[in-house]
Length: 249
Image 1 (tube, rainbow, N blue to C red):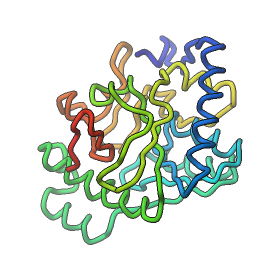
Image 2 (image 1 turned 60 degrees about the vertical axis):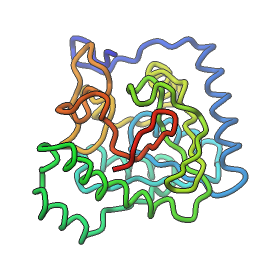
Image 3 (image 1 turned 120 degrees about the vertical axis):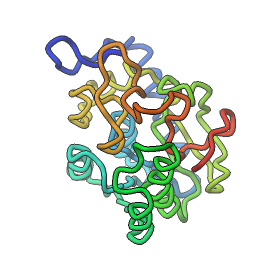
Image 4 (image 1 turned 90 degrees about the horizontal axis):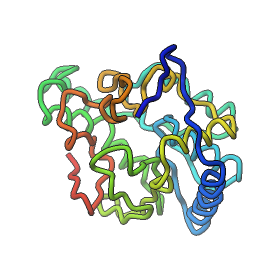
C-alpha cells in the first residue's frame, strides 16, 4: 500500500466512480438505519476512515454522537483535528480521558514509555488509556460504530459489518468493512473531507504518537503501528471480534 509519491505528496489513487457511488449509497443507507432505532455513537480516531463516517453523519444530519479517546499521547495534529472537525461540521466530538489514578499506577509500574519493553506493558497502557475510557464512552448507548476495514490488518480480514460486542453488551457496526483505502481517499476528495495532516506524511493507521510511525512505500498500513511487535498482535483490545478470537487485555 503506497501512500506517498517520490515528492512525498499525498497520492489519491483513482477509484472506480461507479463503485464509489454504490459504496456511498450503501454507506448512507447503513448509517441511516443504525441511527434510527436507538442511541448510537461513532468512535473516532480522527483518521481518514472516521472522517468519512463523520462527514456522512453530519451531511445527513443523523442522530449519531461522535466521541474520541483522548489518551494523552496523541499526535498534536490529531488533537488539532478535534477542533477542525467541530468547526467544519458543527458537531461536538466528546473526549474521554484516562482516569488519573489508573494512569499514575501504570507509570509507577512500567514507566512512562514502558510499553516498548513488553507486550504485557503495552496492553496495560492501552487498557488504561483506551479500554477503560471506551467503557465510559459507550455507557448508555445501544450501538457503536467504527471505521475498521478488512484490508487494514491480519486480524480484520474476516471483519463483519455487524457484530455482537459481548464485552460491552452492545451491537457494533463496521460500515466501511468492505472499503479499500482507495475508496476512502476518493470519498474524501469528492466530498472535500478534512484529513489528518499525518496522512500526507505517510501515516495511514493513526494511533498514539509513541506507538505510530509513517510507513515506507510498499509497506502495509499496520506496519506503522507497534512496529516492534509481531503482525498478529497489533491490536489494542478495543475491537474484540469473535470470529478471529481477539482478546481484550
